[in-house]
Image 1 (cartoon, rainbow, N blue to C red):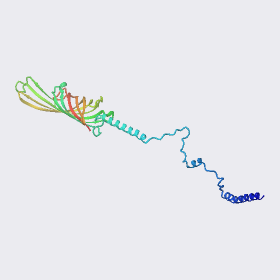
Image 2: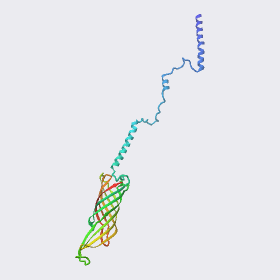
Image 3: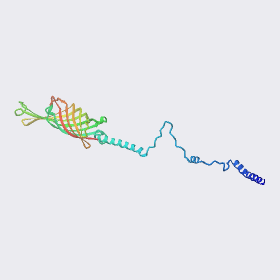
Image 4: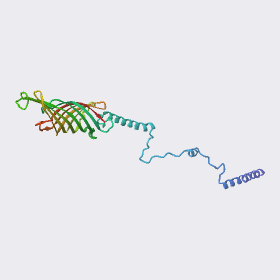
Length: 287
């Protein structure tokens, strides 16, 4: 009986001891230590995880990041290819197609050769010299050139006439020499035909000519002069030429065949012409 009473007193003491601690925990909002759930491994890992990466929208594929080398090298290769093409294109162009040394398109040339007027008149072979100033038009790879040239020639002719003439000494036989000093201005156009050669380019030219000439006549009979005569005039005619440029250095060595013609009918030179076939060589500079 006493033992039972002793057990009941111990139980009541334990209850009275735990009651204040439980009430204090409930007032603070913290459950007792034995009632708090243990933090799981999953919750701990979730708190330490970083934010998830953004996912692509439905139907879109996520682009893989491009390596730095792969992003730069194709552009570099493209620039190198374009630069190489430009260099090759420039190397393939002849000097006149580039507009000359300075790109101005100007042409300066000098020519020398021989003229053969005896094909159409009584004049003999003569020396010719010519200066040319031209401009290559910036169309059709500058194959068209407009030019103005000045040429000098002095063909001459000697004639002997036999027949009685009481006004002349001796047997009346007389002779004369006529020299025609010509300054020839030519305005025309020239077309160069690109045949795919880096050395030779053939060309043709057409134009109009103005002949400013003076004829000096000196006659004699039986070794004695019987007078001199001078005649001047201006005549207009045409011009045609075929030639080829051989590109050497900053210009071209040229070979050219020309034909010019104008009719002449004056007091001394009657029913004749200034026609001449000229063969010339020279050099052109492309500036």
